[in-house]
Image (cartoon, rainbow, N blue to C red; front, side, top):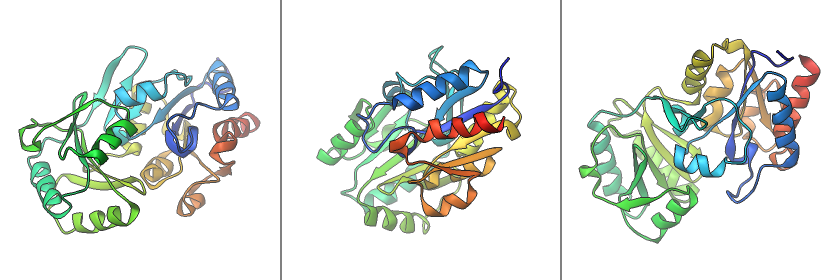
Length: 271
């Protein structure tokens, strides 16, 4: 037992635990603080839009002692046991109709479909290859109509203006059973309706037997908002979207300066 026993802390990855570049390693002060938090009884893990292959490679040096929330809440994965704990995938045929419409309207935008532990590129071009490299996952070219259900999600990548146009166009389509979210200004994701990092947090807390009032979340962008609202204690880094800062119990330092360490120092002084 320790002063953080019964607490579950979940951090976003990009621009929160890590920086802008996926080559950036975990800051020493964050690493030390997380180890201290866990040594004193706390659970620490992360929530991300990535799948278990890409997230596993990126976070191999991140201290953690609880399953991770992946695909923006659609999956919970235990990296210690290398097994899926929970998954809530898309099984409606409407997802293929939706993607067909997006392909017609935005033919040059790179699109990938996530199915189990595989990624299928819908249009095979340099931009799609760059996106596959960015998310650190193997993939192959395939007609999306041939990829069996259930799917995990669809990812579309472009510049910020085009992503906003895609979001607006998606609202005119039949989204029954689906939802579209921006995980970054240049990425649009289509997922199962109702799924979010918040539902992932609630499911993980249930699995671990943690009361939601004892959950701690830190994130910087709009795909983190539901999780930030659901957690018992909420933090955002200085670099977070301005709209999210009023949700925070405390706005901590910029991710470049060790935002996670700043959160844990605050908790250390208040628990």
